[in-house]
Image 1: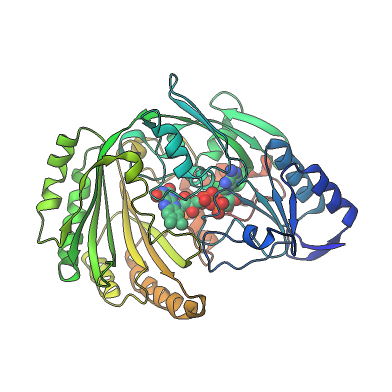
Image 2 (image 1 turned 180 degrees about the vertical axis):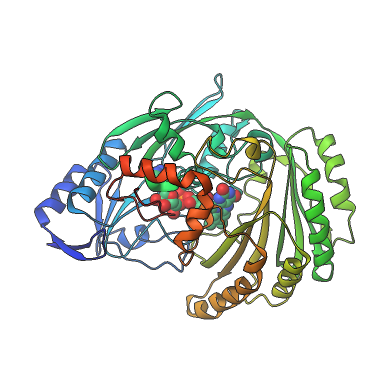
Length: 463
Ligand code: FAD
């Protein structure tokens, strides 16, 4: 017998014959505690998530995924689906349940003539960017290269190309998905359009996507990099930033961060990216680069692939301990700026950061009801990211971030980019984030996942 956690949190004993049959059936293999490879496979990107699933199904294709979903549904097991394993609250794993691990599913095929790419569910953004950049093409992806294509896409997908080419979901042409009944369905604007609608922003609520098909765009050289200022200019820089963002053309992105420099001092940074003629980008970013007295201006032309890995090290490295809170805001008030600058002066860890991402352009011109992603207006996604290396210090750093959050939350909205949800965010915040789309999502959840098998996510309960 193997003791496994159920959907409602109880424990049941599943017969060794049943577990053995699953193990034999899976081409990718099944890992149990004590098996070689289990310790590595139970880990996710956030090192502060230390969970021990009973079973880890390593899926190599749709047939493995179908068997795993059928096994979970038949026995009523707690199920986590893992793409890149990057979600800060650790949705890609669980304690005592079953993990469906897509990381062996790495196939990518690019059709440079049609400008499309078919991508399996376990691919990371750096792998997809490398494959598409070989053809001088790209689709909107995240700003950190070791994030999974799966989770990022299903939640919406914000990145350097979104102003010009829309969110990642706006470039999704079709998906192959295993729903809770174990059926493999191809979905697009013509086939199962309602499920296709729900997948574009509804997170992992509707099934396991085994493959995504994306539209690609010509992208080669871009202008990118940071302008860095000492903390005593941070308030002025953030006030400049809030006024600068609404002036940006679709080709430009501007993010802002308070963080710690490699020399160990808190700084403010403007993170700039321009996807278009470099000479135009130089003009657009001139006011930002001429503002104040920067410590350094690192903005330069570079290949898009270099831009995509620029933020990886040291802040996004696999295995660091993390606690992350986030919310949208349509305003950056003076009071918010004051609270953030005060917080940055007292970072408890040099790896922590306070970041604004600006949503604008093509991604915000899509009607709110056209996909499940509701946040279709110019606004900032604000992230307070606590990160540290030593797990024994977790209580200190989490307390620091909670204190900061308590001070800044009153100046932010009650909605969030659902890919940045925290374990301690309320269901009301999830509902508010789906906005007017929440009702339709609940109705579709009742059709495609009536028992809420896919619940380890920013969850939508069946109507
Ligand atoms: P996982 O933890 O594997 O999965 C996250 C959720 O998606 C889970 O609920 C999982 O069940 C579900 N899921 C994953 N793959 C599939 C699939 N194939 N089928 C069904 N469900 C699936 N987001 C942005 O939009 N832009 C950014 O620039 C960005 N930067 C980030 C930087 C860092 C350092 C981090 C930690 C996150 C960032 N994010 C960003 C957020 C990111 O999009 C989410 O964390 C996303 O959920 C990660 O996807 P994943 O597949 O790696 O994660």
